[in-house]
Image (cartoon, rainbow, N blue to C red; front, side, top):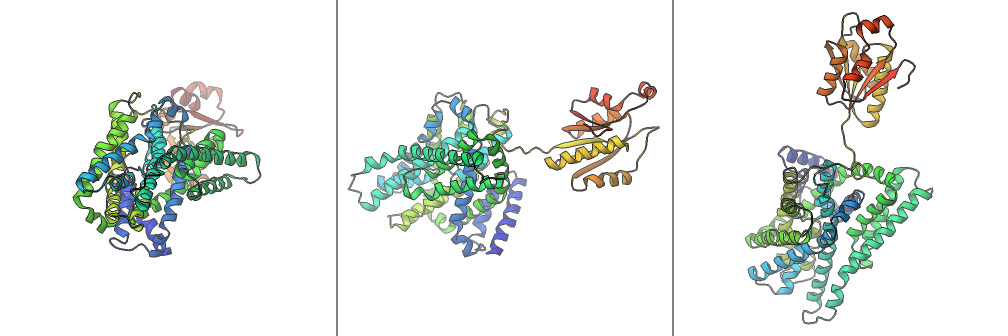
Length: 533
């Protein structure tokens, strides 16, 4: 099992990097790797891991749904009025109906069996969509109109519609197709699932916020994270015992924490971002391993046609109907079709249930479910990354809704004086906290101390050996070289040691620190001889 875990992690990282170099989303590489390493082809993933793959995917799904809730923007969603509400059911209902119609006429199935397939295929995958939308939010694409937030909120809620309707039609087939008693009451569970999911998510979020603020259980952010994920798992585990949408409840949990304790939410996003680096690998590799190539091959062109018609006609019509009358432009609405098309999680979870319960054509249903994963997950991920910079407008990034991932660059002007040593120490301290990079510049000038590169490197290593550092020696006017280098390296701050000069020298050659402050468009931090900054 340890060998299998090592294989998944190392090969997953390499596959993701290879996909990235080819211009594809990294998750596409991980997904394809899972198919190759899975039981359908090479069979390199141990049975012990495959036996727990469902639980591992569930854990990863809790992570990403909770992270999505911590980044939702209530103002942007409310600004679009009823669009988010329509997105919660219209795309799923319309796509399911189109898939059912295609299955009825292409495969010759009755309407109940055709709709059972439709409810499986229509569900969007939070495992694929949520990471992509969070990335768009962090980059600012579509944030002014809240497009990523609409896809996040509407897509997750629509899964409740799809899964609920799947359960209704499955029960109808298994019990007796002629007995329609109770169908209306089962249909009534759809709004119940959504409303109860929101209520339970709010309750869990309030409990978490209370524990953060008023109890002694959370002495650091890791304790808060454990409590939050524990509540999220409880919501998932409670799904069989109450009619609510667990996916929606976990996202609402994160959203309530964001609204109640924004400081804790920011810290939780940072820690979740670190965990997700590994969680993403396991989620998509194991999703790929769940795909059965033989079953997909058996579905053939008919299955591909059904999935394609569902996307091109059903998903498109559903998104267009949901966004009708909104402030979104036609290209932006078209982007939402691509951004909301990926399928994986729900299909992998419920695609095999009809076969296990002896439903007629259950093997074909499983085949088409697997085919929908293989086609739409990579395609949806690719279209999202490809179309976002070409269709969406780049807006302001709200730092309270995303993880700050800026690579800070700090320039230090170093002339060998005590003041410049102190400037280097202060810059190194800040770079260490931000995981930033130092650019240390020494300018040779007649009459000043002239350091060699080896000497400068030793001085820098004494205080910044654990920091990414570029060391440079140039000739010219110090103030101009400092500003020019800061612009070339796109430095965020310039650190300059401020030391007292004799009045006659100030008059003749000027003060370097003051000249830099006058010339630089970059903020300048002065450190004085007494240690002040």
